[in-house]
Length: 389
Image 1 (spheres, rainbow, N blue to C red):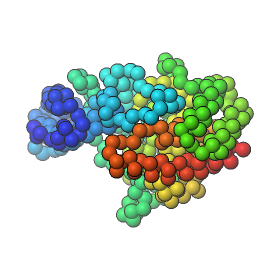
Image 2 (cartoon, helix red, strand yellow):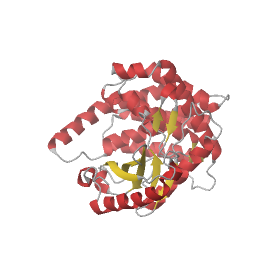
Image 3 (tube, rainbow, N blue to C red):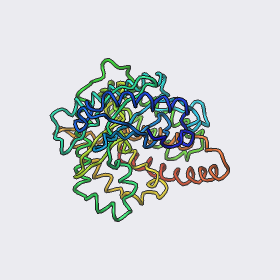
Image 4 (tube, rainbow, N blue to C red):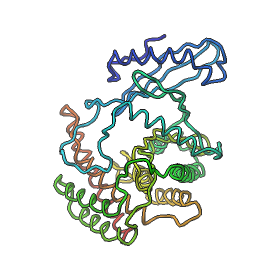
């Protein structure tokens, strides 16, 4: 087995990383033939290709080979290392998604269940439009998930690199339309498959939503945001919520992070959604808002004040998404705009509320990003206020 990349460089604990490699090599030796038919009964060896850290997990990529065929897999290990996450400047910042309280093992188990739920939700769907990320096995010690490796760009990567001519040629306008239509249908199927009755509810009442917006307004003003756009948006949401939303919001088991970075995009707009974490029963518009506002708040979009993606283009994508999600019913545009306002204020609070990384150069760069980004957030607040009035 190869030594692979440095554990120190990845931020992973060396002893724990070595334990993962050992545990996986034993599992792969016994199970690779069940995962991939090309191996059959031929002895298979595994080698670590890549190891890197995310704020909430370590991701290991392994190569499996019998000397003739090769298949790659991913092992995902949840962690709670605070040093890999940026600290908060304020201890009381309102957060739409509260800090995770379950153990790393339980979080991994929740994702494992979510992958199985997603596969069931796509049962019978067109495989030319919807891929399924197979959860191959459960790794015990440290607890993690063994998954197929997908060699496709994410939606976020495609959007952030649109300015590169070669990539633009790879993704045609018709492919993009199909992608957004598929995203709406995927989420409709996922929500319909599990209404989340067995999960704890989170912000499933109208009054909870309005209260959260008011708390976000107070925080943003205290953190130095421009008062005008914040006041106008919060006031409009409070006024419109009673007219648009019922007392009990439509809810289901949420994906947890339905964003462009968690969607692989293949040929002709085919999508494969991953990283589900259905921990709560949430308002169905939360997943829709995370995806759409996530696109409008991509880093390059924020820093260039909208030069990456034209506003009319984003509007067309949203329309496609909502039409597909509605499945022949009335597209919930006003409902989405209200929840987008909630997401905007949440992301705005994150922008001004996180501590800069250590180092003078990084701190200066952070101040520049906050100053430039705040102007785009103000524009988005005014846009949503106008749409809701």
